[in-house]
Length: 431
Image 1 (cartoon, rainbow, N blue to C red):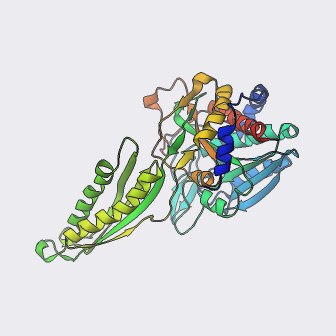
Image 2: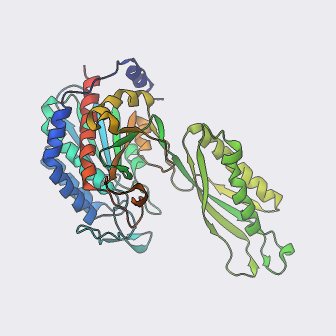
């Protein structure tokens, strides 16, 4: 691993007491909170889909230039990267926010609700920030404001990364963190921090985890080839529909019977089945599309080997043949919080949010392309609460739904965390 020497350095460092600027950051965050909310409302009302964040990136770039930063646009098509150079020696800290909305119709009655429309894979669709990326951009702009005001006190550089297409590029396109890495965004970066607001976590709290916090995602496609026949004479066919049913059930044993579940939580889901055009015609092929979610590399490697073996064996037993495409189009690594780095930065979380508001959480099987940044340098990914305290948990809407909602008040903690993680890391690693 290319940054193994840095892990060793982190392990050798003593536990770090939070930097005394924490209270200064809190005061600054309170002072600009209304501006952060204004930014969030703007982004929320004017969402744009993946790789189409043209006006969003202009808005962000113009503001960052007003802070006297070196700003680069058009990164990974619509991304924005800005450098804050303190002029003092020290590490370069990367801070990331994603920018894209989703093809979801917002049903809220907010005065700043989205009424936007866009085009997704050739179809006109509603667009909304149904996952909270509007808050991510606003929080990072808030941190940029605070850190630029403290420029002379910093030790090193900050790279602000506003990333497009986290939700996945449109068909036929590439995008997101993987493309940013290929274009050199992580060059000279020593560490990277990212946050995700969470609609089912209380405002004022932050969740963390050592190791894998979000799963790797690997979409796949299986095509079962059989022999077409009249539905009245199935013995003249090689039935790909029945074969597909056997394959679907067989794939469920990859997790339940082949992985040691106490250490290797994983999910294999078939989400799409296509085959045939009439009730009385057995088709010549059936296509299955699914997703694999894994939380460690051992489980991921096992499923990559075992899935084609199982599919082909079942198909052969039915007299059919199979074609397996894995991964299908995109593939995200595990979002992995390097344990020694998590240990070193945990005091910062506790000093910022209060020890009782810092929660060690379970991993989730959702995925994040922030993981591509973590493959290049050590990084931490955290969840910040966006659920109002007076909303019961069972009434909090889920992400990627028309009812999705997070409260403006949750952003203040995110602004402080991004700022304090930067300052504390710089002070730990400056000469």
